[in-house]
Image 1 (cartoon, rainbow, N blue to C red):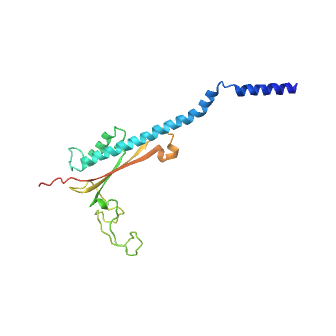
Image 2 (cartoon, one colour):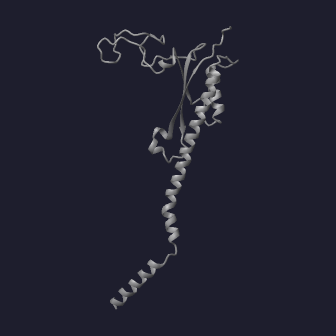
Image 3 (cartoon, helix red, strand yellow):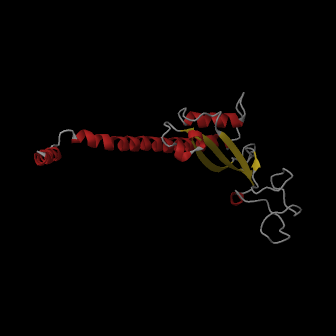
Length: 199
């Protein structure tokens, strides 16, 4: 009797191995989560690239306004610049949450450069007590000589905007961190027009 049971068990196992009914469902159950996660990741990453591209384009348009020196009625130049960025980002970037900074430089090659100083001890870095040239006029040595503001006629201005884009899904939150937001940044450098002068 046990031999007969073993034979029928083996026969059943062979039949089950040959039976393909339901295998598609099992394959789908295994592969569907992977495909769905991949698609969500593609959509998320595409939105990040799209918003970053809009942010760069909006900042470029805003800097074109800023370099004219025009002062709109009822707004500061900074407020108008942020409005232009928001308009060009299709409402995806909240201008109240965006951080816009503008730095004025004496020349293009001085962008991001430290204020000149006398390196008395030869260590290659500024130490307290060493003399320096206060290029931006804030009465302290700075690792970046840019002065805050939009500058005057023919000044070099670096526009930088930073925005924390909230991810659409929580899928990448653990990977990225930062409370489910990814930091986007765009910069553009312009020379202001020679406004206020007549020839």
